[in-house]
Length: 235
Image 1 (cartoon, rainbow, N blue to C red):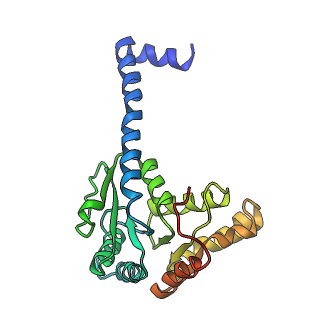
Image 2 (image 1 turned 90 degrees about the horizontal axis):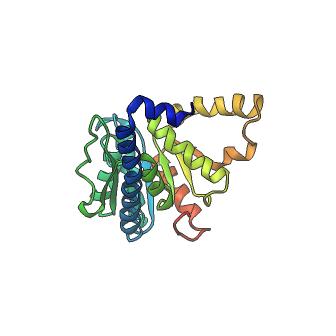
Image 3 (image 1 turned 30 degrees about the vertical axis):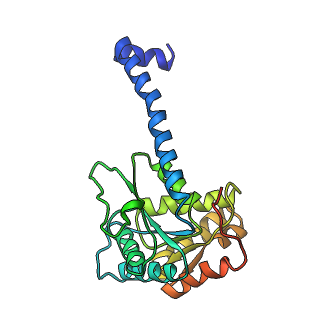
């Protein structure tokens, strides 16, 4: 008995047909999220995505730094894209809106209901059911990633971008990690274990990102990068 026959037996023929129909209709839901995202994002212009923990509270140094970074980037002509939620995302959208810049939120529906923050431009809030569609929007329409301390979601977005650049699936763009005290342990592990001991990455791969400690350094790295390259979508 193959796997499909086993599932048919477990669910019954009627329920199995219903599952297959629902799977097929999911394709249209995915397509609709892509179409809406492409249509809205293509009109916004050059943006930088800012990532970090949803749990970081106002007053925390990284919350305030995200606000500062976003404000400085908007003064240089960039819009700001975030995941649309609280914490670092809220801080970055706040910095963009306070400085008259474009403030974009790509919110995700989660079981514990991530509400969008109030600093997103009303015409630039998009809601997603699928993480992978949302991540395409981040990469396709960002001219840079600025990553502050966060959890698994932050790491996921960071390493996906690094992997896409490493494998030449997208053009290189600046990836900046903010907070040397937070990131140094991870980078040391990558150098000592992943690179030196196991040889799973090359020395050149460590040049795909930069670690900084100030808002000024983060912004200047993005600006200097685009003194050499034309701004455009990444694929």
